[in-house]
Image (cartoon, rainbow, N blue to C red):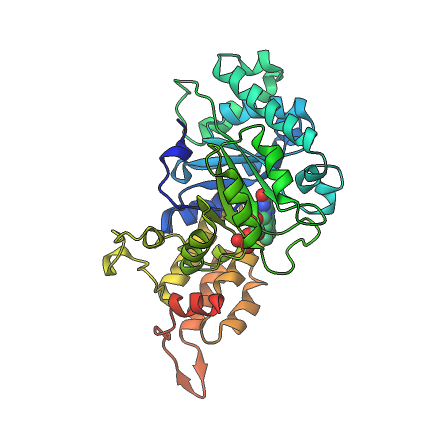
Length: 391
Ligand SMILES: Cc1cc2nc3c(=O)[nH]c(=O)nc-3n(C[C@H](O)[C@H](O)[C@H](O)COP(=O)(O)O)c2cc1C
């Protein structure tokens, strides 16, 4: 048994997004609307094993994000064997192999979605990761597994920084794969059959080919075909692509028979996205009602700005003031779907500190227009934003 088996159905998870779903944004999401499962941004197996410590930033996480799965990419089985042991040592709940990244720098070297063209190699990466996990669970130390003592110290420091207890029981971790429908054209049946030979615990399927990148609409009919192939094999299938609201989740799960979905871009500027997810399961949500803070479908401007500010403060705490420019895109994403959002957004892309952010928000509160001081328009809420996304 692993954590995937205990998740409610349909599973509603946060999709990994490099440069977006960092430890800070994920922790804001976890505290405002916890997804059923969370993935880290992808990390190259070489960076896990050998690169300067700064490259391990993508493997930082906090306990409230659990269950959390580390996503790795690369094309070297030996490095996957090593890195899988590190993922265990760092206390993750699962290991995911990226076989879907379409970017030239990744796919052209045969990693990410490039692996769709080399199914034998893709399978050997899964085998190597599983071997690393089994050896670690069997009691092998990282040094015995091939790590230098200095690297082991780095992992120990990361665990201490997280406040983690030393591992008391070594258990095997589930290995999953996140991929696309094909390389140039949709070859999902043949590709999924290859993956199933290695019995990954989960396959997450983005409904586009590598060639499509992010263009066009995700092909959920192809995801449905994969779902019927996977049914009964013991592997779970998560569909992914263009989910913008809870209605999309119910509809896609109903149409395709997937075990769940991953949501990526729908969460940008909306860390409360997952809050009402119980509704998708047809249950009365215990989070319903005014006492829940960010209530079911309405997020007022006051609340939106409070979360935005909290996100910015937490970002500085985690990554430091010098990195604040990385926060700007998030600030912009929060500013949509309400009057004068565009003008606020244009200021957000230039903001350099929490203090500056606070004064911009304060000025927005008392924004003079035609000589009149306007209060917030509380009537514009998240429901409207979601509705516009879904149209
Ligand atoms: C900025 C950005 C970064 C991404 N980084 C990753 C990544 O690190 N690993 C991964 O498997 N997918 C990555 N993806 C793909 C998403 O996880 C997801 O599959 C894709 O965006 C489609 O889902 P969506 O329509 O819900 O966004 C990224 C997507 C975006 C937009």
